[in-house]
Length: 181
Image (tube, rainbow, N blue to C red):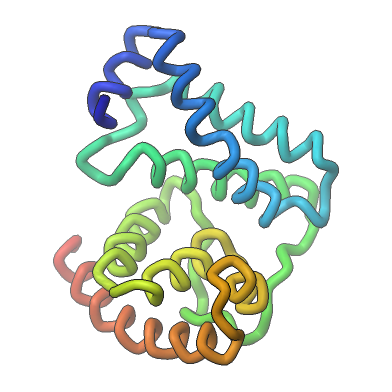
């Protein structure tokens, strides 16, 4: 079943299809949520946030537009956005390092959703493993050491690929943003 069919089934309140979505993406969304709020909240808060993401998809499946990306990416971005919002409500600072690759990235809110979609599109144009490294850095907000562990590459290579990825992403992103206007 493709993402369009899944979205249609969820719109029609097909619980079996929805259960399959929950089973397929629960672990991924938990990792994303934990990477953002895990240090500031409890494990039960992470689980609650993931449940809220699925609840929101169940209640508002029409907000997912298959033409803008995969269901996996939609749920991942929704999780990231809701996790950041949870931190902002608690007024806890979001941990970030000084050498974040693209300076001044906007928060993932409804008004910045187009930017994040364009950034994802730009990252998709990169080759592996740079694509995966940039995704984990920008969308999952993992530090180079954590990415190094995930991909079993040394930290120096991760940093080099992030540097090269940034150089490649800036013109691609600028072009995509100009086309969007």
